[in-house]
Image 1 (spheres, rainbow, N blue to C red):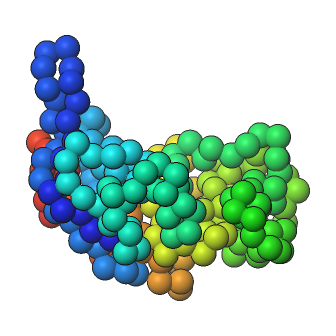
Image 2 (image 1 turned 60 degrees about the vertical axis):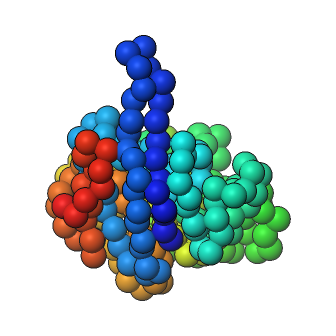
Image 3 (image 1 turned 90 degrees about the vertical axis):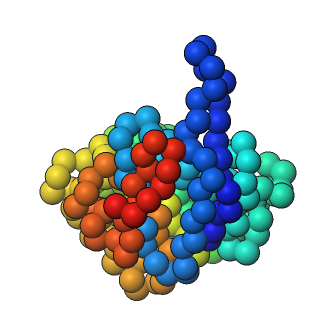
Amino acid sequence: MRTEGLSMRFSGPDGEIRLFDGVDLSIPRGRSVAILGASGSGKSTLLGLLAGLDVPTAGRVWLAGNELTALDEDQRARVRGEHLGFVFQAFHLLGGLNALENVMLPLELAGGVRAGARAEEALRRVGLGGRLHHYPRQLSGGEQQRVAIARALVTGPSVLMGDEPTGNLDRRTGEQVADLLFRLNEEQGTTLVLVTHDPAVGGRCDRMLNLADGRLEAG
């Protein structure tokens, strides 16, 4: 994964707002990187650009050998479906589906085979083999985040991104979720890119970067 000259600007009531300018970033496969910064610095926006969820004002982004900035929205979605897993701070589970069904969903949308068996294996891998048929309201915050991680991993992505994945959890549960993310990074060789406000989580990554005043620098 890499970027070249990445810039993001917005028009505000007081003129142009520059979140960042000319960001060059390269993340080798299988490595872990944390992006830290103050609230409003543009961390989540940068992660969204790396995932192809948005397009930059200027610059280029590559994911798994695909130049996302040269693709339309549908093409970017296809690349994400094939290569990327994304974990959100707020879990984003569907309340009407149980844990197994939530994890099966991306496989079914992609027309994958053996969706049930693959989803069950993903849930067992994150320690939720005994919670397959529980609904989100019946799960703790940490368990819901584990379901979200299983959903992100079930398609076998080469890159896993997390936007404050421990931000809604208490310290102990957050540490357990972080342990899981780093274990999966190590065991499966999945590239891990985390936006976090927690220096303890960031310090566990191979590389820690800080986004401030529009510049991305070593933390």
